[in-house]
Length: 561
Image (cartoon, rainbow, N blue to C red; front, side, top):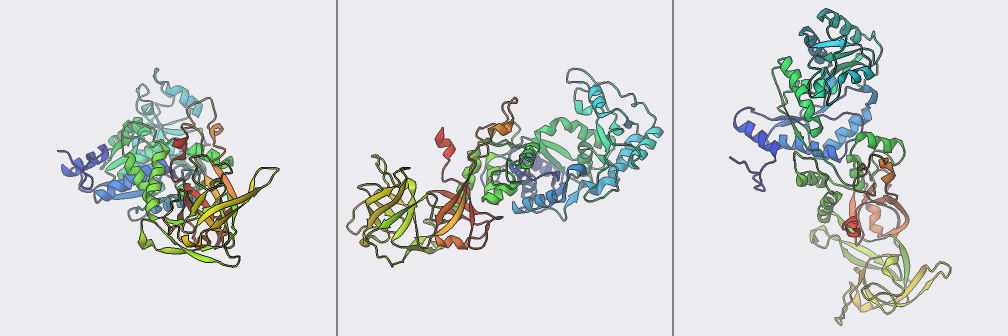
């Protein structure tokens, strides 16, 4: 029987189908999932897919989801990463069960399980150096060779493992390996390392431990101890599943979670490798993990993306078994759709040129009325000051307008948004550069609000800002971080060579409506005809917002093709 989602009557994805079947046939009474990040960096949009899946299915099936940190490599971990991950998960709209969990919570049990493997003759202490272990491992076409230490007695292995735990050996000299099959076609089963000596201070356990378990060993046992029913992970762990199962089967654990793999998220015009993201941060190629150009969750938040837009994006792309590359435009369309409904409208001139209305009173300042949202009257109205001198966009004036150009120019009349109809009179420019310095026009006092009582039609409508009352603002035009769809396609070229030099353009002389002085950090508005902009949550101060462009009003990259 096909199980359908009630809301959209679409077939469930393969993971939800498995879960639904397990509940229906009584295999599980309650679903328990987990999201297990390593606290060695900030989360990115790929992690958001996993967060939405793990927490999402738990919500949908009245289950629970644990937030569990895989803190088994203290040399690369930091409390700041823990705090950022907790903030990101919560910001996306999800809550974890009871309290945050850590793999380090289980270090004593994990050690005891390792001792049990030794006693079963299923683990041994090996003294091969790391390079030698790789050499002995073999290749995809050649079997591995057994370690000369593989046949040690249980007693000797127990003694050596105790010495490892007590810190009596140097890093890299002794490891504990599972004894499985050096001829296995799966390289992960060729006596994998499950413990190594690591004398690093741990952010939770201090200097208590001198040895730390490896991920593959830790993960399955942590899942088991927490009663996880479905361990959802990305496809790169598919070849690790036999080891996941081997550990639990060999130890005859009372709970055996089912590992299920799904395709990771790959997006155009970006990289998802945490190592490469760290390289950009440490190399100063971006302004930190929360740089609005970075597709980290903190970067997206600072840029003005909403939790709903990211959740909707993850829902739109769905869950599959095959790797694919999602176009960045899909993500951008989701934030456009979301902000189109919630963002109030404002006017801001990014490249100002002054317009002087020759027949407007010198000392008069009027208040025009502008709707905060043209499709949502309940969002109210705002007062917009208007005076003799205003600023318009430089591109909204053309000295020699073409036939299809409907904005201001010699012989042209245009409508000022929420203002008057104005008629061109003259303009002046810098003869050395050819740059327009000011434009003179007249206004029709009978057309307040932009409507002519005689019914004459005007094709062009442009935005503007009062020169006397306008608010000077700094605007950052953020764009895609890379200039090519797949920065990693050519392995002979460093991905950094594909960085987009125009990914961040700073405009320091923009002029905005004075109402933007009340914009709070993190708030987003639509600049009419320009795009959606967010008050920077780090650098904005009261009355002086720094505006980050979240996204353009349309896909400018697609239009360039």
